[in-house]
Length: 301
Ligand SMILES: CC(C)(COP(=O)([O-])OP(=O)([O-])OC[C@H]1O[C@@H](n2cnc3c(N)ncnc32)[C@H](O)[C@@H]1OP(=O)([O-])[O-])[C@@H](O)C(=O)NCCC(=O)NCCSC(=O)C[C@@](C)(O)CC(=O)[O-]
Image (cartoon, rainbow, N blue to C red; front, side):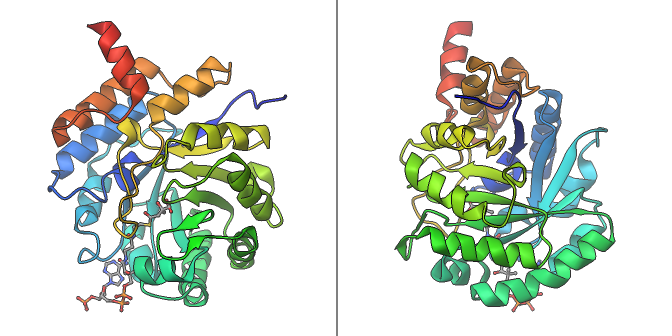
């Protein structure tokens, strides 16, 4: 079996990880988290989102966080923008990449962004156009590509349809997201295969939540197909406010341990990453969700 020699990780902890936190977290803590993540070697960081503060209060400090981080050359800072209002707000903060986020499930689209899949494309199209015209890269997150909390199992044809819609409006690369972490390797492979009807494998990333403990198996299944872009969340933070019961993304520490163990380079210093995870877990007052971090911390004594 051939595996890629290196993998690129998008750290989504500051956005996907923290968006669901009930307790207010100071912007200074989020800024410090981003600093620590980039110091650990992360080269793509999803920092925040420009969504309604009534819907997702935890991301209301988007300007403050983006203004507070110390930009490093070679690091790509991305943000979520669901509509032109969000994009215009984000523009002032000079993101390197914006993310439009759609779903393969009608019900999830309604719950998450208050519109149908078709309407979401009408909202995204001018955002994509404006971003590309401003020289900003565009990624498309595709939620519920395996299962939906409201509709149950999602067939690959729906993923193919969504990927086609994303491609048609000019989205440059897409995330195959298992939003509620119900996927198992063959189902995830089918969702990726469906996506590849419209995108080359180099433009497809795996975004796996770990609710059922399958995220690393799903990562391996994606690697076997040639996927080399993945998203993860330090300390396994997170969950989606519109996917009840879903836990966080696969922990970045666990993913890095898997990849390094397979001889796949990430450019990430695992010890520094564990420190970043400890920092945010302490700030939240709970233990890390990463099994690798727990093992390494126990070894440190
Ligand atoms: C998308 C909207 C805004 C539509 O919400 P809406 O109510 O349909 O929008 P609207 O245009 O009718 O506006 C209603 C109000 O929202 C305001 N508004 C409108 N747009 C914005 C904006 N961009 N930023 C700030 N405010 C905004 C607007 O100004 C107005 O304010 P009011 O007059 O009532 O005071 C809303 O549904 C929303 O914010 N949803 C939150 C979506 C979200 O952040 N979900 C979590 C992220 S997705 C995710 O986690 C999945 C992912 C990506 O990780 C992958 C995976 O795992 O699946």
